[in-house]
Length: 249
Image (cartoon, rainbow, N blue to C red; front, side, top):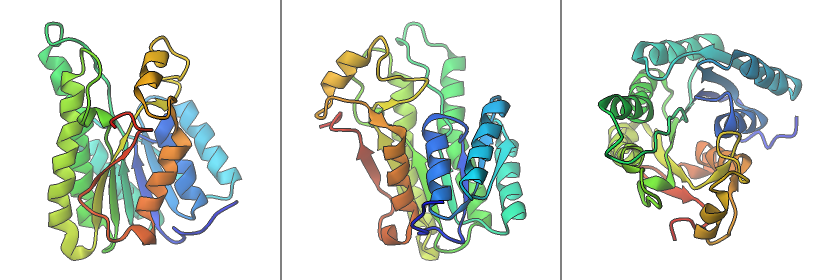
């Protein structure tokens, strides 16, 4: 397995890792030497394919079924990760939902699902991780450039939920700094995934909004996450870091 081994001996937990950006993060952390556990909700077959791919690469990985809207499921998954691999060093909170509609059409149920998935799940995972994580660990939340910029009608509750992660990272960084645990928020711009393809109906106007004129790749986000998880990023904490091709410039 081609690896820099920057994360050799580390144990990582990825909440929401079966597809898209999450799957790219799982593979990259494994290539860097980490043992990885990731969660999925319904895509069991896809998760098994990812497990098989990482094992074929020479990595160590397990998939755990856990709904990110259920706090106890998140806590159980983190405890299972530590029990299986013997420790916990890195937590990546990638689970999320996108409900995009005008304020006149949104329901309270839309608001609750957005907040529960995009904010509460991050808080719960971070809280549980703090109980089990080794000193010097990393908590990395996957936010969005929409915390800073809402380019179209309908992004109110999604942008709100991603903005919440900015403040959460700052507060958790203060709480966990004495243990040398860093907490950071990665804010991707448009990324080419099966759920948001770069040849989709709205892709051309979206590309035109970015300085680079293209969608990002899931592997580019994963590479940045691996750096923040690694030993050279130990002085970065409480930060919200854009990786958006100039979408917010």
